[in-house]
Image 1: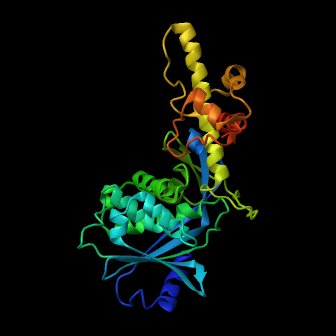
Image 2: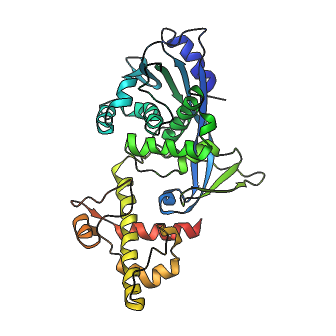
Image 3: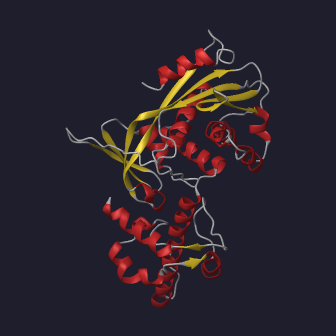
Length: 350
């Protein structure tokens, strides 16, 4: 059950002034995940196969007597003390999202967006009214054993652990099924943190089973029967210590390039449709590159997807993409063919 025993022990030992002994505390735990196959293509509709890890994030919650939210991280230290972030409930309820994102982007504060962002999203989705003066603030403490920035979803584990805890605290579990909870966590990542991830990480952290691979067709999130690992088979991840972040520029640029390729292919499909039928065709891919047959792609469409194109040239010729999590930057160039190749072929490999 680690890191639950550790975080409870440390809350009592190091945060006894904030977490009052004898007052109810709620603790939650959610695991990290290992992408076994398909993960980079979740946002283009691939089948993915994901394993849950024995590394996890744990969150402890206790209600306060005022209307402040105070968040502590045992993974980050400030002068040998758990790092602390404080924000009023009224700020989460009333400040524009852009203002909140500016606050979380201040040095040393980004980590807090994954927890406070869950409160913001629950308020935005009208599951909780944080502006209600009868609503008390919260103390939230975090400790995780999932390696940070290693590509094993430390952020999703934090979001899922926090969201599960809040859903129980506010007594709204009967209104939120597993997929809704996962989607709310994804909204935290997309809207508050500003990371253009798919929903795969959050679904795996919440719904994954030990000893099995969670399988999901990401169109947008159709869970398939899990794949039990054969006896004697284990999946092991080796930490290369190369930092990975879905909020990083490379991830967002690559994702954007894949959707640019999708738009170019759809443009050519429509050109063929106009020539043959005198009518525009809808998207035969239903919005997902994973639905394009690799042989059709290689034979008919790949030649219309350039290796490189500037954002300005793309926008002038094709307009914006359908992706809601990224936007084409006119000032940079994109490796569109390389990204499109991978996404079309990865779905078939998985």
